[in-house]
Amino acid sequence: MCGRFSFQPSPEMLKSLAPDKQGLFETGDIIVPNMDILFYRQSGTDVAKWGFKPNWVEEDFKATTHNARSETIHQKATFRDQWEQGNRCFIPANYFFEWQHGSGLGFTVHPTQSDFLYFAGLWQENQHGLRITILTKASGDHVRHIHRRMPIMLKRDVLPRWLKGSHLDAINLIGAANDENLEIRDYNPPKKEKPQAQASFF
Image (tube, rainbow, N blue to C red; front, side, top):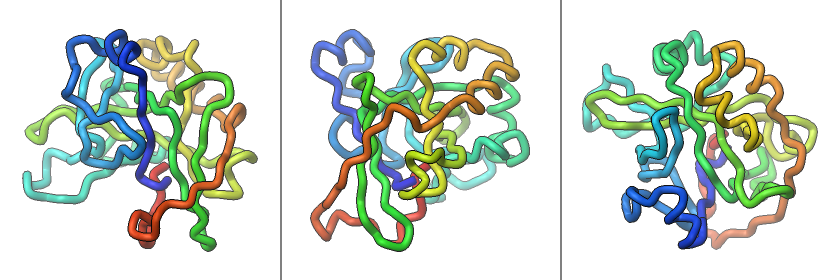
């Protein structure tokens, strides 16, 4: 839950992923909250700011909620309506960053069987524009030694069910998401880049 991920598709893939969105979203080694990012919802590919901003806060309110605990999205006012309305989405990433609690050691987490991870998310649209948040759950055995929480990572073959399925489908997919088929690598950023007291991205 470091608040950062990488999205570095090839130029050819960019054209196939979002031919009508070129130049509207961020790509690169480090994507952080409040950047414009590419995401997929039931209606197709779109671009949104990363981080929910509820409709009851003022426009100049700086804090955003870039993660949502999957266990409580049906209860929390910030996420409840989007969950109930089926505003589900997913966000592609090449890998994400994480800092180990206590030690401050940095890691990157990569897929081993594909080029991309697919984070489960929710989207909202209000006076603050189109925004997304990434869902999290308790980490599995592979990631737990780094952090107690992790993003919900969906397998590619279940993405249509996540977007278009019932609430029961979505709940089952959240339950089935795990941290298998991941490779964890050491990450040593320059000191000025290392976050201070970083709560987690996922």
